[in-house]
Length: 74
Image 1: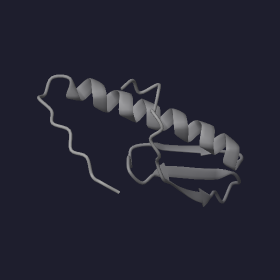
Image 2: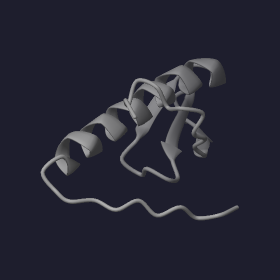
Image 3: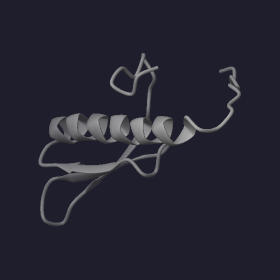
């Protein structure tokens, strides 16, 4: 799966209001995905990009390793 296409995957973002104004967010499932925005909508766009970048980095790093896929049922 390309990191550009999240394929319907859902991620949870913890949002906090910044003392300077605006919002910061951190993805719970991918703690390295952090961003900010002046509005919730801007934060959502920026977080989408941050999540894509983290996934892309993880995919690139994982290319040299053997992998298995584990599916956790709902």
